[in-house]
Image 1 (cartoon, rainbow, N blue to C red):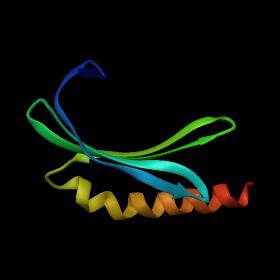
Image 2 (tube, rainbow, N blue to C red):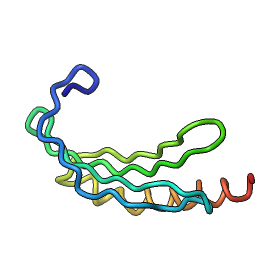
Image 3 (tube, rainbow, N blue to C red):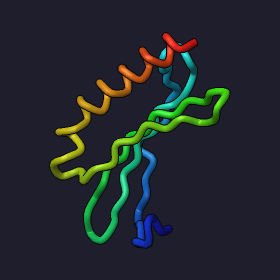
Length: 88
């Protein structure tokens, strides 16, 4: 596989489960991949709307940045969910 012109190897689905954002059904996907010798983790929330599929992603090197930034990502996801539920 290729991503942004770079070879991506060993993509592993770590977890895929239902999730709710702002009362809307969606999913949470966690991936691990290797690119140029670096292991990355990706966390994705996705949920469909009338306008299309919304995706909120965190993609960072696993060694340091992913765990460091995960709490901020979850906070942003919760904020988006609150705004989405008010917009209904």
